[in-house]
Image 1 (cartoon, one colour):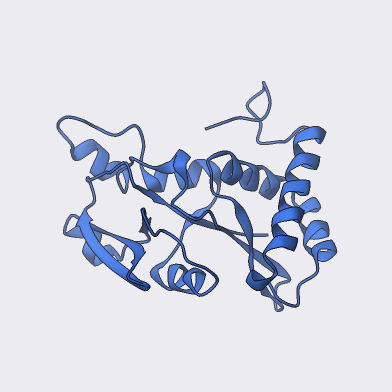
Image 2: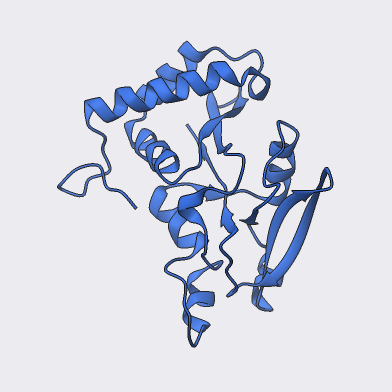
Length: 192
C-alpha cells in the first residue's frame, strides 16, 4: 500500500492529484461505452470536491485497478467508479478472502486479505451483481479471477465466492476462504 505523504495522511500532493485526474480523464474519454451520457467536467467537479475519495482512487490506480466511472445515481449525485483493468488488479493478487481465513492458515500464509486491502484503500469488493454488470461493459478476468462479496451463510461455513469470465460466460465459484492464488485478486468499487 502506498501512502501519499510522509505524515501518513490520506492526502495527495497537488502533483499527484493533477496526474490522477489526467489519467482518469484519458480513460474516461477512451471508454465512453462505460458511461454514456455522462460528462467528464461533472465527474471532475465531484472528484475535486471529495479529496478523501481521490486518495482511494489513487490507491486503486497504484495497485493496478485502472478505475473508471461505470455508473451515476441521479438521486444522490454520486458517480460509481470500479476497477476496469482487463485482469484482476496485479497489486491485489495472491491474497485470501478475509482476516479470519488468514489467521486460520497454519503455514504458507499470504501477505494480506481482500477484505483488509479493500478497507485500507477505502473501497468495497464488488458484489456478484456488480461483477456481472461490469462484464456487460467489457471482457474482464479472462485469465484471472476476483473475490466478490460473500454471503454470511457461505462465509460462516468456511467458503468464499469468486468470479471470472471464461467461454464468453461469467462464472461464480466457491473456494475455501483461506485459499489464495497468483491469479486471484479482487475488484473494488467506490461511490463519489
